[in-house]
Length: 267
Image (cartoon, rainbow, N blue to C red; front, side, top):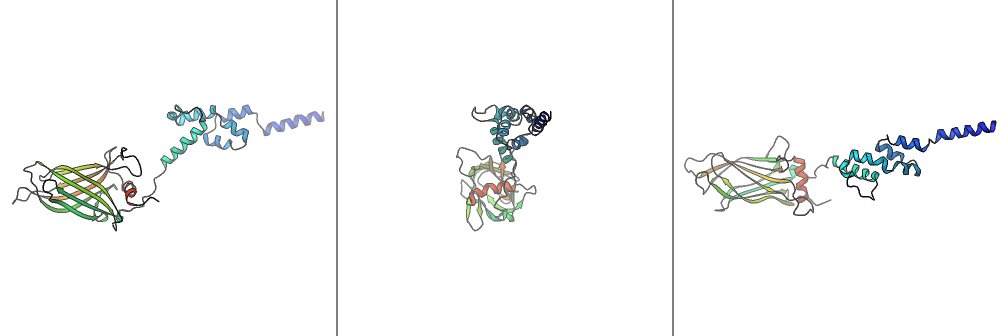
């Protein structure tokens, strides 16, 4: 009797330490991905049990349904979840701070008439001296330009112009051309000339791929002088970077992260 009691007691103790595999499998179906991953580190047998496709398939289908439909036959669902989850975390990470500051940059602007080659506006300005947009976006104004220009077109007819805008790293240690293009502007009182040019993608991407952003340029004309009907005054020049997704100006940090690809060496 004693021997039988000891055997039964030993068997009972063993059962309390190691639950039946059926119970473990049932419980595992209610565990979160993080808990399943931790449980798979207990031992080899737990790792096999906690890594089965029947546990991870519904998790992947729930969290990443688009990827689950294209899973290669050789890739386990646990591996698919790990890769997709890591990519999701990287996407939510805040981008690093730019290595450039606005105080490091100088803008050079040159607008000329394509017909006469006469200069309409020519300016070299440190960005910190420009009028910045209060919304924290990469848009700057050169106010009180007060350039007088005698244009060739009569009335409100448009005239061909050439616009060049460069961003220069102080000390002329680097230069990046934001815009170098031709366009038409109407030289009439209070008119606003506008041009845009697609910017190249940063890094070593293929030239056929777009960057999704454009350089933006605006010229505001004042009233004519009474003595000459063809002389207009340039009152303000505005430059910035626009996103083609929503046609809004990008933030200063995003713009600095972009231009540093062209002005700073890769670390």
